[in-house]
Amino acid sequence: MGLIWAAALASANAQPVADPAASHKVETAAAKAETAAAEAAAAQPEQPLAESARSGARSFAEWVARGVDGWFGDRPFEQGGSVTRGKLSVNVFKRSDGDPDVDVRFDARFRLPNVEHSAYLFVGRDDQREAAKDAPQGRTRQQQLQAARPADSSVLAGLGFSLPNDVDFRVGLGARAKPYVQARYNHSWQLAPEHAINFRQTVFWTPDDRLGSTTVGSYTWAWSPAVTVRWVNSATVTQAAKGFEWFSSLGAERSFGAQQLLGLELLLNGRVQSGAGTGASDRGVLVRWEQPIYRNWLLGEVVAGHFWPRVAAQTERDRVWAVGVGLKMFF
Picture 1 (cartoon, one colour):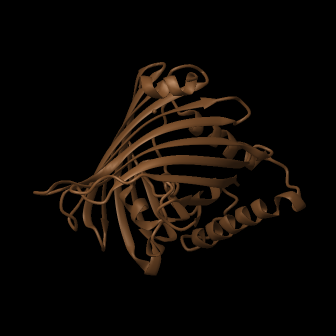
Picture 2: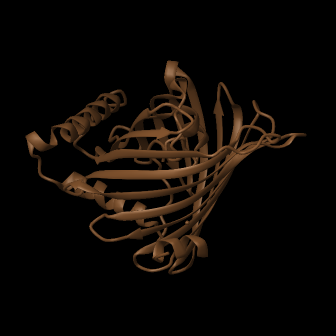
Picture 3: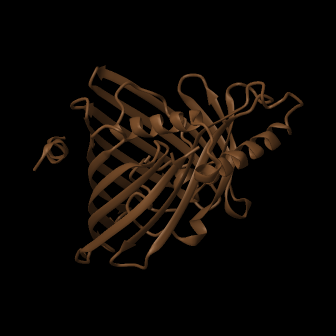
């Protein structure tokens, strides 16, 4: 069945909004490609005709950063200010149980010279509830080719503070000025040169969910220089909902060089309801192909998947297929 399929069976989101995750040596092939694209995008010379969209996105991001930084003092933005991790993505996808959907997301992280060195500004467009809950990569509706509810997709902005001992704190605003607060602990352990585990605990508050918590654990195995296997598990509990949401993903990524990437992912997610056992749940298989379509900062993606959703514990599972195409632009 090929190297990628064997890797997935042997053992495999990402950020919502910019994610200041703790770094570790074992990275997924997708993470390596995304980091390389972001770094290369910042260094590329400008060509107005071909790169006007990217230039406009970066100019807007810098305009926002300068404006916010000016609230805190008179120090010029050039003295230590920066825009990093800029990304704009547009995805069009269709599930057989729903209408075609277009998903537009962007995020960027800013260093503000008039704010403490440990503070940063974040701005993005994402699913507000997923961002506030700090959902792991693969758990988001976009990653599972599910249409987002209009009320959940909005512009998010706020301030983050990187504290000692792998702790991060955020205060943000979403649609209709709805606030949310996060406190996150994120730590990685390098078990061996090819093996690493990561633990992330996020405590959050939103007006809708009230107090909640998301726990994420992942294991990453660099099977070879070209193949990475990753297993991710998460659970989210809130005061507003009975029981908890759970998610599990086993996937493998095969790099073919020049940012060409093939991925296979097995997905399981659902809700455990207090006193009622497992409620709605979804199982699925996703296959992805990604490659540059212009230089190394504009990437194209094709996704195909098959899912077996169940709306309640007492019902039979349906069979649903899904396809999607997307663009990712780094600036």
